[in-house]
Image 1 (tube, rainbow, N blue to C red):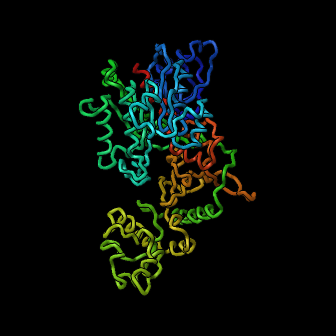
Image 2: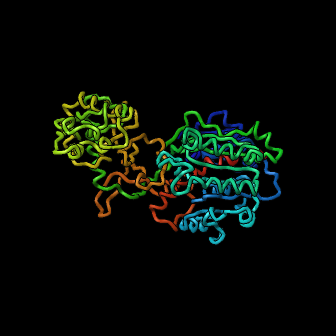
Length: 531
């Protein structure tokens, strides 16, 4: 296994003496780290280091905690407690006493699980941050603390949601204001927030400007007077096998003299160039897990036939996702949207899979078109949609001698199975069995077995490992299963947690909403290093 890979293990035979592919420039940091963590290493070497040990050694300078009191933090929108777990691990590994003095989480089942995992009485976990609706309640219920942590709701800003931002119809967009009010009253030394990367670009940057200025502006201008830094990072940049871009926001209260050093010296962890990711490092091949449905397996087998034909005929895939419903279609798409055309404009053209369009009315003719072509949201198809349609039709024209026979097998399929996205190099034989699969509403997505696509709050998009032998509920042998909840927990750095209070679907959902513990840990160490 090549380093860096935080899920790997490496043996060190004394300070500075390594066995397995550890680049020399890591050794100075490792030496400092080990001298603190294992001061008597020479007495019991060799020892086994985790890849995360090496990652910390690279990113964090040696430091000694000199504080007399525990490092107190609060955990807002806590979910499974990713911030709590990261700070707890730091406390255990670096001898830094940490204490969670306030927790808030809306969902009852997650509060129960949080209580079970962290030993905090259930009745002490705040059930609704919006009940902290006055300065007096904040002073009464929220203790003083050193670090305010929060992965505030991301759906109002996420590409996967409606992107309504502060105007979110469910009221989630204004929850940032409750964070700001706690900061205003309690004035913690540090703030540490996480959200989707789209927060930075949402509403042409206006959402981020509002948040940044609220945190950073001086109090006389309505701000909270914190020196703020932000960065977008993904676990895969550190060898952790998940692509999950998130914005991390760190700030220091300018009331403290250390803020100038923070402004000049604080830096986020440096991503590792060409970090080695391998999804196999989190997979338990012996765990049968939940097999994909037999019909899903059949769908994959048909698409493998498609790839086999591409391999045989040296057919280069279109750059756009494959929209097989366009194979043989001839309906007009570059001018007015089809719903604005007449029946005469459409009748006699070809629709889905080359089927002849016919009907007594325009509405009947439209039923022969793909769902995305019936939309009445715009008078003209956007450029990207026109490009996708054009590239798929051109691909069909180049390869229709074999596509016409193949496409007979997909007649009557749901739209989500007729779309296919190959996110892999085409060099060599294209083989689904060695890839990661996602069954998404937008189609079947295929990627390399390096890192997982981001876990999402939608449990229907759990990654599939098609090479693993398993069986259906009736015992029938079946290839292909979903990532297990334990594997999903491991990919988020939460493998040590219990999930006994949650259903399987809720575990996936909660992990999809969680922060990545290992990335949080790396950043938190950088914050503490500023002390």
